[in-house]
Image 1 (cartoon, rainbow, N blue to C red):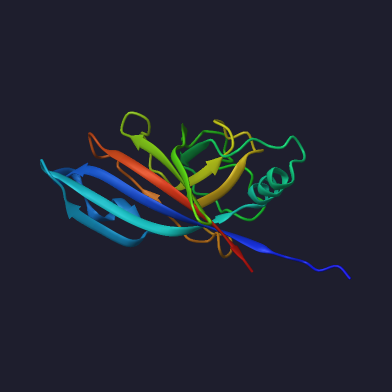
Image 2 (cartoon, one colour):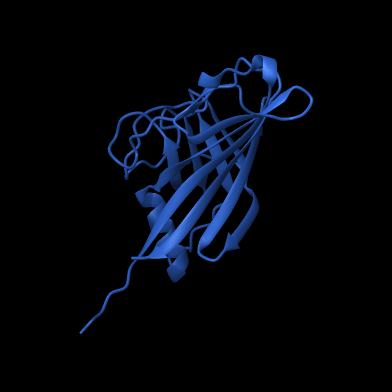
Length: 191
């Protein structure tokens, strides 16, 4: 008799932005839960929010390959990226920006990687010097480019089916100076 064991992977996006009070408008961020705008110091605002995200098939396959030490094994998560692309995301999506960079794509090395119990956290820092487009997707990759082989999970996109069908947008293009940290937490659980 062969018994089976299973586990699930769930992700959660955390957003923390510092923006000028006089330039910020509430509708610059959509698709966030627990969306808050608080006054910071020196005429700045702290904008926070979060939302669930979903692994795509390539991310699940990379996780299993790394767990088993096979097929390379593939590289670990090393980058977080944003894209202006808003095309539908499905389980078979392999690129954050399937249009090939036409709409905007920026990746940064992840930082502050840590694990607490069954949750691993990754941060990615973006600002007005690195992103000059509306961010409609955020994702984790195991490389710096959107090559179609290292996409782990995705937040955003328009259309598709659950859990990929929730639009998301952060548009700071009208703001002169801003800084933004996206954090993605991945939690494993026995099912």
